[in-house]
Image (cartoon, rainbow, N blue to C red):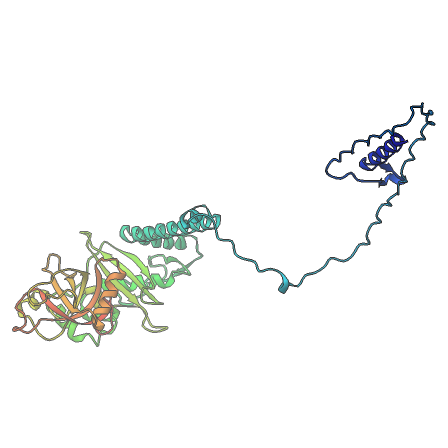
Length: 411
């Protein structure tokens, strides 16, 4: 009896330790029992104790009934939850976004950052283009490319623009007209664009071909104002016709509208500029005599010999220089320029000084730097220091800058 009870307990205990899984309808899984994580050891069956009694044969036990399996509870599959709207969390309730520090040192980040590399390439290209344009401008200035371009432009217009006949101008300026059928010269062909240029050119040729001073005055600007200067100049120069081999156009409108600058070239190749301007609408073109003759108030050698302490105006060329000695030693305070006489080749040079911070000093510094250190034409007033201040023959003060270039009314 004890053995039967023990066996039944063992069967039940084993059933509890075994996972029983039953597949339900629709593929659902039903779990009957779950074994514990650790194994259980069944206790050994208890031994029976016999009582001193007469031994007798025990009756055969009836066959044991099979253990009834435990009732298995089916677990229904969980129904799907209904769809719900997403939960929106306010931005204020979100945790703060902490910036993440970049990796590597600054040099590595700049070296491998694609935006930095793209900006660097753009900067290098822009710098290269600027340097290229500056180089072209400097070379064009030194090699006279722009003059050649201007001449080509003039040739293009003269060739392809609509041509209209204009009357020939008289070189002598006497105004005589030729009658038809008497061998008169054919009319000059000129485009509508350069008709004024042709008129200005004929004025220059008439000015050069004048027989004397009185006839030349007809083609001069401000002849009445320059009476004293004309008498002084032609007292030392011949007032007859000026021989030349050709007259070339250098620049159109250098002094604004209705102005042309020509180069008068003689047989020896020497050049002298002549400016033709129209003083007012409807008036004929006239020549600026002072810039053509390069007239100055006093002869260069006479100025150096007499050393006047009053201001005297000169048409000259100036370029920065570094001559600081004797009574002009202060390079921080004074600006020094080398002065050249353009009307006389081989004339001795002068050195002019002015205070850098003065109006004259700032003007001269700007004009000379604008021309990249080349000779700059200008009209200035010079004077020598008092004898007790300096006895140098080639060092003078620059008192006034009249104008850049050699063209000015009344000079």
